[in-house]
Image (cartoon, rainbow, N blue to C red; front, side, top):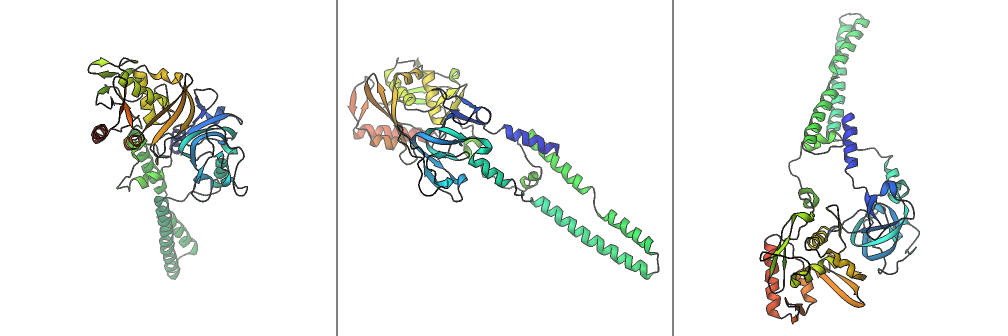
Length: 417
């Protein structure tokens, strides 16, 4: 029992209990279960490109969204994806279609649901047990957990031992009566046989065996909540695992910057630690705008970006976090402050590109980043090393495409600005 309790505590501590709270422009992450009150402003976004991302930790009314789509499967009986409406400037308050059921609330972000794409901000209307997720949790409290195969086998063994032992005892009792023995003596013999036939130490042996398995798995940093689960794990022959965050650390690192003319700057370092890497071109350190052709690319990557790095940890999508770290390595991360974002078209798996409209000293500027083939379709020119705008003809397109395929063949993910 103590092992079960300890494992449960460790598992509970490993759960992400934080959410973005819009108390300042930096969106600090705080413990939502302890410090968030009704009426707080919260932010939520997709963390991983091309898949469901951040889990919503609170019920909230959406008042500003940028193409945000939320999977509300956990909050309704049938699976469906709902679009939380809003154009990034004015949101939809108390807007819903159909009846007054919870699943018809189009502008509510429910706790426990996943952000499928985009990002948004809203006001917290309920937390923890008072949320819709808490209501579902209360309904589940009355349901009993199904027995494991080992528990079913133990129950079956107990029934069989009882059946055969009582059969043998009854037979011996009848034979004793036929032989003229005393009834009380035969009853005493029957009770003795019944006690001897039931293996009283079997549950203890099973519990100790499972506990040893739990301890061995704990030594390999595997947390087991319930001891009977060890028996099921012992029967596993094939493990189908999700790669991102399971077999890998879910960290991305920018390794090189390539210009349309084929010049390539190498980036060192791993993960989101800024001090461990630099960006160099032909042995020269790329810092600030020392190399304009690379600085322009890095500048677009950090401005057309929603991620941030706090204490060597990315807040946002890992790919965008790698671009922020690249900007920090080259001293261009402050470029964000020069641009005031006006509008955003978020990245989706369908479009495969992201765009932001910014105001720069009274001028309207658009930045786009995304997949090679999709962004190339939107362009008719490129910026050369001397800062001149040149036509993007078929020869240059083919050269850029071949370069992107070459990077992809080495396992790198290419982004075009």
